Structure formats: structure tokens, C-alpha cells
Image 1 (cartoon, rainbow, N blue to C red):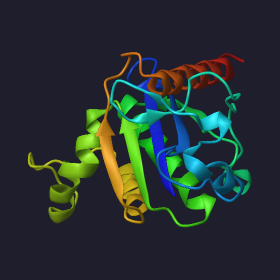
Image 2: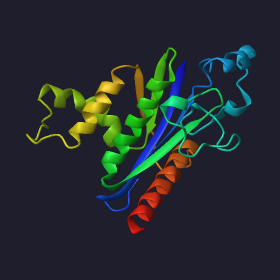
Image 3: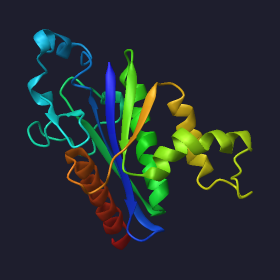
Length: 207
């Protein structure tokens, strides 16, 4: 089974109250969906909730409407791909945009690790070049230098980078940058979930 993940993170102010979100789903061009969906995909047909449409990036996507999107989907204990998308969000009272971008990917990969079954590959779609370049390019040098940058400064957010690095080591991951706020339905869905999380954090701070 191959997994596609869209992630996003952001802040109201930087630093400030922040939110993160991900949407995770099986690649409709790829694999059986943890059991029951393996029958539904015979004959080249995807389950109804995962009929793909084309996006600007040319990759198959499930529709932006149709099966209801879970809000704050169940934690790892109850996660299932058999019905389509899994989405989840969360927030923090005092954080930064980059920390929320990283936290989104970390939570998504933790969800993947909870699903069980063989994972043939993962594609992570992020609108953060900080995440995409950091994990696929910069991190090699950081690790070689003991988490010190080329400017001889400690790597910012090293705690999260180390956690992400450990999670990513368990999978063959393609890190794909996508332009934010450009009409991609799942990038937009993640952004909406981030804004929901930020509003929830603000409400908690004001209560």
C-alpha cells in the first residue's frame, strides 16, 4: 500500500497561537486499502469514496467533496483507511509557523506507523520549502556537523527535526513541494483545518 499525505501548519503572529493539520489517504493508483477495499479495487475500480480526480500537480486525488471529512479524526488506536480520508489537526498556544509545519508532518507519519500492514511508500505534499528542503537536503549536513548550521549556529527546531528524521527513516518517502493557496483541494483543506485549530487555541486562551 502506498500512502499520500498533505500537511500544513501556521500561526497567527509568528510566534503566536498556531495550528497544524494533515490529510492522509491511500494512493488510489496504488494499493489495497487495508482489507475490505482490496475487493473494491479489483477490475481497476477505486472505492466510491476514493474515485480520483486530477489536480494541478498531475497526481491522482480523491474529490474535495463526497465522503464526510472526519474532524479531529480518531487517534492511532482507531485509525482506518478502509473508508477513505483520515484528517487530523491540533494547535499550540505559543509557537512558530515552522514548528507547526514540522509538527503536521510528524503527526501524519505517526498515524501512518499506527496503521499496520506493509507500506510500500509515502508521498508527503507540503507547501513549506523549509520542510521539503530541510528533510531532503539540509538535514544531511546538519547531522554531519552535530546539528550545527553552515553559519556555525545551532539548528533551529532541532528537537522536531530529530523526531521527524527518526520517523522518516522507516519509510521510502517522496517529499513533494506544492504551491500553497493555489486551488489544490487537499492543500486548501489542510489550511482550513489549521485555521480551525488556531481559532480553537484562541478560544481557549480567552476563556
